[in-house]
Image: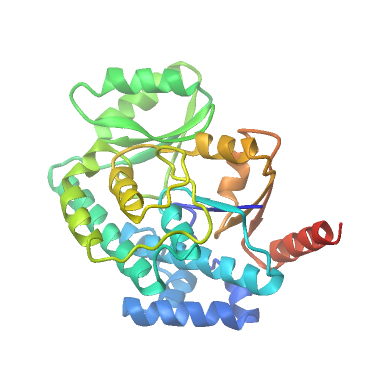
Amino acid sequence: MAAIFPGQGCQFIGMLSDLFDKNLIIQKIFKKASDILKYDLWKLIQKGPLKKLNTTYYSQPAILIASFAIYKLWIQKSNIIPNIMVGHSLGEYTAMLCSNVINFYDAIQLINYRGKLMQEISVSLKESNIDGYFMQVILGLNKFLIQKVCEQESKNNIVNISSYNTYNQVTISGNKNAILRVINACKLLGAHNIPLQINVPSHCLLMKPIVKKFKKFLKNIKFNYPTIPIINTLNIKCETSPKKIKYNLIHQLYNPINWIGCMEYISNKNINNILEFGPKNILAKIAKNITNNLDVISINNSKTLSIALKKYNNLRIK
């Protein structure tokens, strides 16, 4: 079984509410996280305001802790540990936390600082009158065609593919004007777009200015060898060296996520059972558009947890 963890954009008000009420382990994890963050994380994701939750600085720890809490609940209930892990963007940090590459405190500090730096980029762009849609999903076109459009429209502004989600779905990031030009050009070719609830240009060349600060901060974080293999989304390898893992996290900031490659890697390893741990089922939906060999269940509430437990208990009996 493979475990997958989502990135930013899957947050919503009220997520994990029924799991929290019924499971002490979820309550303890959020309490511990809130003590580190110095604000009530659970209150924020239950009461909002949504505008605050959608801000990168707050949404990143919210998704990290929500996904980690669901994963720990799964282990408690099933005692079934994944054979391999992979995380989409921010989800890569969740995978590292679940695989003991970084400890709980350091994971939160790292995500907090990453979110802070990314938010600073967003503010500086606004001050430069470069405001608007920093990230959009483009649906219905071949990834190579979208790449060509991005190259054509990035002569005066920055825009690039930030995530290869499926063969005909990518995410683009960059300056407002360039993104709008790409969207218009893709629409003429038959595509349509979806705005994302993300207020920073993730996995884009606009992130390069924060690399130096992030690299310096990483030096103070202790990285261990993974207890469960983690697929790196840049080179599609299971890196074990802490040095290489840090290197990839730095380059992940301004390079695209190859999610297609990650799902193909899992499928080629003859692993066809996947569990998604996160607030929504976004990754499960796109995984099924990459290969039909993958049987994916998203655990995000009590009902889906019961479905997953029943399935894996039956597999264990067989």
